[in-house]
Length: 294
Image (cartoon, rainbow, N blue to C red; front, side, top):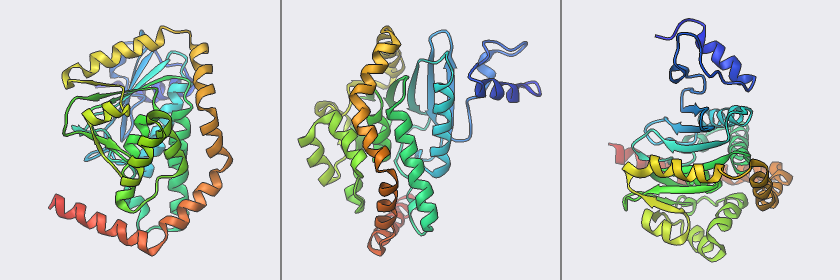
């Protein structure tokens, strides 16, 4: 068992941006200071690489609580000088993330919609602009917001399983992917592929996603960890400042566009999601999910 007072100490050290290498009588692996209810984060200080695992069953949906924990975890890693890269993956079998939590967008107040959408924006802004090397180890299906998380990383490796799919499928639910989802998608796969895929709300199988450039590599499940580590090492072999400045140069225009129109984007979301026709579509989708579970 963990001695009393150790976890609070770990948390305080992390808040200061100095993770402990070793606490007396306690192996570092037992210090779960990065972990919280829905996301587990472990930092290997010898390599400077953290692993962020989603652990919010059944499908790692992006609820307000999940998004808040995601942003806090990412901020702690950004502020920790020992951390240079983060691998984002799932601890839930067969699913990376199902995307935005539908229950957060159905039957709630306009105040709640605003708070939720601001959290979605914050998640993307932090991840897309991160100074760290970010690698998505996509070990399950990844629709909608789950796909956005993968798209926002520097590199995407997906498990070679034709049953796993990935894509921005919002159109299937009667929802329009916002401009910054679209911009992120276009920057990865190109305009024509993105246009067709977004209009059809396509979910692409792992082999198809690789063919389209949506993911960079496919590997067998048992090789995912090894491959992800090798790719991370390749990226970290470069001087941080050169890589970071290049990344900022490539992504700045897309980031600046959301920052400049953030409040407008929130109001557009509230207006759209509050429409009775959209609420009806979401209720029907939730009923369909309940029947599938039944």
